[in-house]
Image (cartoon, rainbow, N blue to C red; front, side, top):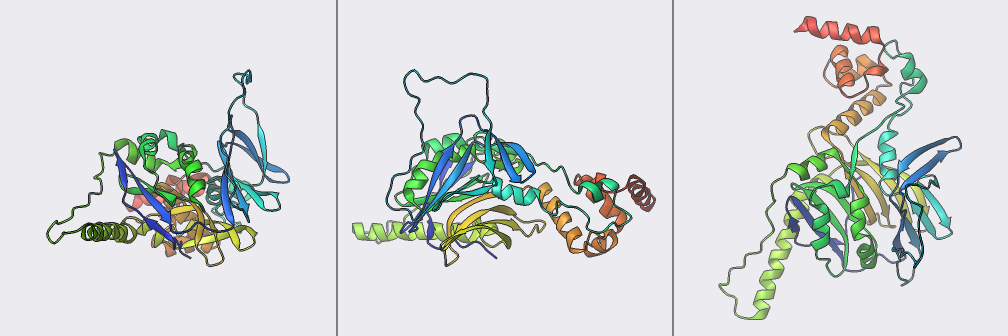
Amino acid sequence: MSIDLTGLTARPSQVWGGVRLVPLVRDEPVPGLRLAPETYDEGLGVVQVGPRAAYVSYIPHAFVLNFGAGPEAVYGTHLDQPGESRPPGRARLRFHRRMARRVDKDRLRFLPLHLALEGYLALHFGGPATRWQEWSDRAIRNGLSPRCEESYTGAAVQGLDEALRVFEIHPGQCGVLVYAADALATAFVVPHPDDYRVLHDTLLLDLFGELIYHYALLSAPVPAFGARIDDAGVRTLADLRARAAAQTAAWTDFHDGVMSRGLLAGEYTHQHVHEVGEFRLSRFLPSFARGRENHLGEIVTDGAGRAAYLKTYRLSEQQVRRGHLLAALARNDWHVEDTAAELGTDAAQLGLRLERAGFGSLIRQDVMDGYRARVRRGR
């Protein structure tokens, strides 16, 4: 399944250093849906994911989907009252029951990108379903627990804060595509232009992968989009408007066909999370194909499958490699020889690949030592 951005049009980009921001505008807002922020000053939260399972995480904000919403205002700012004080040096724990939870009959609160990243971290989390001789007692008993991945907040991505500060918000803008060194970092789409104005700066609270962090840190300034109009044949303002419109259309075609192709042309596996009326909240995982862009994320689609809300996360090559290996093992019921044959290698090479990917402890120590010896003898 692919991602459908029908109804959203890419406008010419704006550049700050190595960061490129591409606005996405709608002709009409998505009817019957609004998105509002819910911010937490301390940011430390306990997420309850099951009756006896929870984890502590940095949670700077949540989103609240309002279904069947009318033309009400969206509020996202808290002002301290005169004389109001907060105790220093303490962080309050906020308890969240599940990643997405209905807080009213027509309101759904969820944690942006936590919903999507949970799907990646839980990928084949149970480990081997069959006790093949290669797997350690730990693999059978605990599976892939614990798993962790490194991410950075948007505030740590060099140039993003300044880019958002000087960025011109377009009339009708309902989203943005963020590039670092012209690599697509994230797509962010909301239902209504007023929602986007409120949520524009929340990109600094979002999570970005190590690939994007390093691209932004090491990138030289990227070229800005410059429209050049041949004045030959331009006699009236109508002629000038037509030439300008043609330049804008050319940029949109180039962007959709080249720059965002890795996201839009990808194949994704969707997992349904919640549904209200015609709207469905889902998270999605990529195919983990090597040598190409892989994005995961969360999306709210309408009855026609078009994106009303979208937020994505770009995986690094190391993260793609881990997902690729886990998916191949799961397809082959965690049988090492069969998985190695599918990947065009042998069991020893596959064992070392698993070790380099951080999964070496799942294989029995004597088996791993045998793999190393076989590889050394083969050199």
